[in-house]
Image (cartoon, rainbow over all chains, first blue to last red):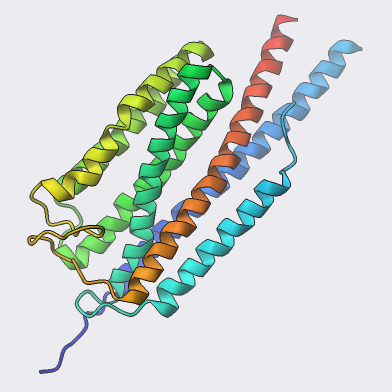
Amino acid sequence: MIETIPDTRAYLIAGYTVILGGLLLYVISLIVRWRALAREERWLAEVEQGEKK
Amino acid sequence: MTDQKMSLGLKILTAAAILLVVAAGCLVFLYAPRERVMGEVQRVFYFHVASAWVGMLSFMVAAVAGVTYLVRRTRTWDLVGVSSVEIGMVFGLIAILSGSIWARPVWNTWWTWDPRLVTTTIMELVYAAYVLLRQGVEDPERRARFGAVYAIVGVLTVPITFLSIRFLRTIHPVVIGTGNAAAQGAFDMTPPMLQTFMFSLLAFSVLYFALLLHRVRLARRAEALEMRRAELAAA
C-alpha cells in the first residue's frame, strides 16, 4: 500500500506568516511608541526652554 | 530621567533572543522530520506551543509582579505587570490564530468549541478586560493596586487552560504528559522533534524576557514623560 502524505504546505505558510508577522507587528509597535515618546520629549524640552526665557 | 540608551545586558539579551529564534526556525524547517499523517502543517506546532507557553508565562509573571507590587509598592512592579500582560496577549492571540490554521486541515474546521480553545479564549478575554479596565482608572496608585489584584485573580485562568485538556473531554492533543484517546492530530514525537520543540520553548522564553525588558523601558519613559507633563501644567 502506498502512503500519501497530505499537501498542507499552504497552511504551514499561513501559520508561520501569522506567528512571525504577529511578532514583527508587535516589535514595530514598540519602536513606533518609543519614537513617539522621544518626539514628545523633544517638544516638552522646547516648551520648557521657552518658559524659562 | 529615563534610561534612553539600551544597556549592554539588554543588547546581549536581544541579540541572543533573535539568534535563538532564527536557530529554532532552522531546526523547525531543516532538522525536524515531516510528520507522516498531517504533513508539513505539523511544523506549526513548534512555534504554536511556544507562543502559548509564553502567553501563560507572561500572565504568571504579571501575577508575581502584582504580589510584589502589593508588598513593596514599587512602581516598577506595576510596569512589569502591565508590560507582561500586553506581551502575553500578543502571544496568546498568535497561539489562537496559528492553532486555528493548524486545525483546518487536521480537524477539518477553523474553530470548534473544544475546552482548550474555549479556556484559552476566555484567558485572553480576561486580560483584554484587564487592559481596558486599567485605562478607566485615572489615579496611578489606584490603577496599579487594581491591576495587581486583577493580575493575581486573573492568573487562575492559566492552570484552568493548561489542565483543560487533561481533565475534560477534548480533541486537542496533549503534548506534555499522557495523551487522551479522543485527541485528533496527536503524534508521537521522535527525538529530533522533541529537541526542536524544547529548543523552540527556550528560544521563545528568551524572546519573552527580551521583549519584557524593552516594554518596561518604554513604560518607564512614558511614565517619566507623564510626570514632566504634569509638572509643566502645574507650573
